[in-house]
Length: 347
Image (cartoon, rainbow, N blue to C red; front, side, top):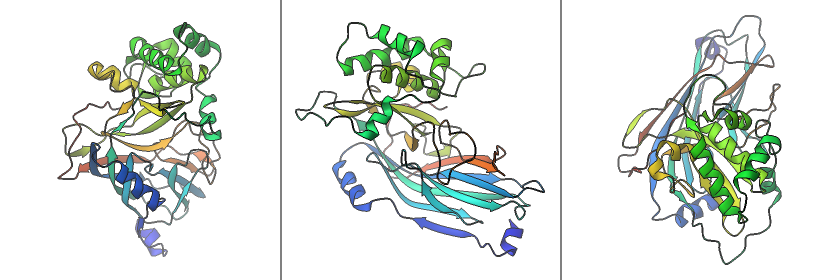
C-alpha cells in the first residue's frame, strides 16, 4: 500500500506476549503427557481500495483465544496501518482493532497475522468429584440466559422438557439432549437459513451446520437450567501436515456441578458416528479456538448490531457494516508434532 507508506505510516511488525504468563505456564505443566498438536497458523485479511468520499474504516480482527487447552505464542501482526490489541469484557475475546483513514486507503493492502498454537486434547471425567463444585458464578449464570437466536422458552423449552421427561440428573439430561440433536439433525449446507445458529430454525428444519447443531443443543440445555456456552474457531484436517482452511468450526460446553465444564461436539459426532460417545465429554486436538459466546459487543463498540458470533473480521465503513474484505487461513504442523487421528468436520 504505497500511498500509506508515503504518508508516514511505516509497516509494523509486532510480537505480542501471551496473557498471564505464570498461570499459562502452570496450565501447560499440568497437561504434561496429554495428547496435543502443535502448528503455525496464519491468516491474511485483504482490504480493498476504499471508495472515494468515505471517511473511516473501523476493523476488528479476532485473535486466538488463550485458555488451558490452547497455548498461544509468537503472535505477530504485520500491518501497514497502526492497530491496538483490545478485548471485550463479556467473554474475554481478543482482537486487533484498526481505525483507518479512508481518504488515504486508496489502494488495496493486506494484514497478516500468524502465531504458534499448541492444542491439547480436552477430555473430562464424567464421574462427579468428591468435592462439590461451587454454586454457579455470575459468569456461569450468563450461560443460563437466552441469546438473540437462542431462546430458552416457547418451542425450545417445550421440546427440551419433552425429551428429558423422567430424567432428573443434569448430566443425564445433557446426554439425552445431545443424542436428540444428533438423531434428528442432518448436517448439510442445503438451501438458505443454515449457519446463523438460529435454534428455532434448526429445531424446525432439522438440518444445518455446526452453528445450528450447537445452538439447538445450547438452547435446550439452558431451558433445563444447565449452563451451556458456544465456542468457535477453525478445524484442522487430520493426517494433513499443512494447507488452507476453508471455513470455521464450532462446538459447545455445558456445566455440571461436581464436574465443571464439559465439552461436546454434536456436529462432529454426526459426521463420525463411531465417535459419538467420545465427543460427549471430549474435544480432539484438531481445532483452534478463536472466540466464545454470542451477541458480542466489541470494545471500542461497533455501531451496528451485536455480533452473532465472532470468528471472521468485522468492519464498518462510516458506521455501516462493510463486507468487502477477503480472508485466507492456513496452517503448517510442527515437524515433530503428533497429529490426532480423530476426525473433525469443517463448516
